[in-house]
Image (cartoon, rainbow, N blue to C red):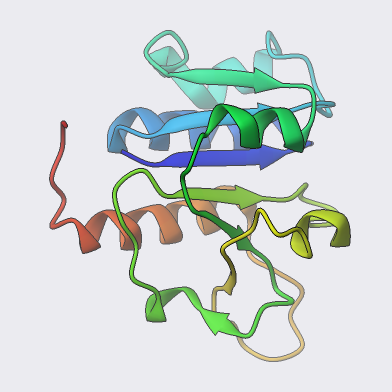
Length: 154
């Protein structure tokens, strides 16, 4: 359905929650190394429950490697630095969404890459840093899925 891309995720429970989200929305999860944890981490498994075995998780060594594997999908970069509200986008099946590490967000090299279709943001009260990563992914994936009337399958 969609591709969720986590660039250098740091916190196992966030990734575990996102694994559950991906399984429940029919999305693929792309993880770009290095991670701030081991994929066999107890915290990751606890948050992911039994969904880890059901998830379609693809690991990559770089953003470029991930991009190549996605062929011609549009990539939206979620960042607090964007001016475009995620709710004002027209999402389509197979769109991809990239999210940065919890403590520092996406690097400028990715944000300014020609491989990024659009930078999008989730509105928040002024002077706050950011939302939790797994919450942010949930908000955007469910909005994108809503654009498809919550259809599943091919």
